[in-house]
Length: 345
Ligand code: SAH
Image 1 (tube, rainbow, N blue to C red):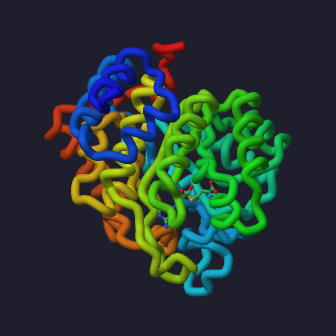
Image 2 (cartoon, helix red, strand yellow):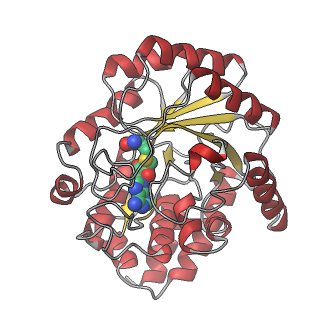
């Protein structure tokens, strides 16, 4: 089958097999058709509205050593921080003023708060009338249940790569099985569950990327956040070649074809590699943006990779700039919580 026909099939049936995905990923002859098809599927299933999720990077302390990540434990150049409960709640109050309906709580992989205290923070945020997303790495099933009870609604846990060998190389002392098991626990615990991958990791093949996309679909992910790998100073991959914007965009667009009603963010890493990258992503299948609400002094220390946009700008300016750009492309800002609206399967 020609790539153009594969895309047509994906748009109509929302089903593509490994060979078909591989054929699209490994060639560039129908990229523009793919982006247009993903845009149509996005419009049909989740509409024009863009959901804004306010992101709080509440700690950069991490116990893991993912080879690509700027805040890995062994990176001694990072000034570590943990926001106090009061600081988090104050950011949440600002986020409320800015009109955000969802707060995303993100951190390194480390329990910087005791569970009781973390649950208190979640309950207080919940009482301000937010949907809450966690992005805090792997926890125990008991902790997932506890946080859910305290008010968390969604959980983002990227699989990063489903290639067992590459996963092992990139994540010392971690295991792909544990990560997959965590995703299954999260679903069973009733979270809206998000995953995603890094596109362009050293040693990653197009074949393994095709399998990543099949994994998102088989898991029944509610949200898929993905982006290009960007080499980060102070990591073992500092001098490696990074991923490309276009490949990450293709993986995102293919994911939209396969999971038409998912929430898919236009990620910050895409904006880092390409000016207006997030707007391009919104025109190629994405329907979510996660503006940063972390204060300027801390967000510079949450340095997963270099070149993050708007690093020295206030949360208010980040929001205003994004809203202005959305207006420019005719995409309204959603006023609801933005839970997944199932329109397929
Ligand atoms: N610690 C949490 C989440 C924080 S990091 C967890 O493990 O889930 C959020 C995401 O940033 C990661 O899932 C990873 O995909 C991405 N990331 C980390 N380093 C990166 C880099 N160098 N380039 C691009 N994305 C990166």
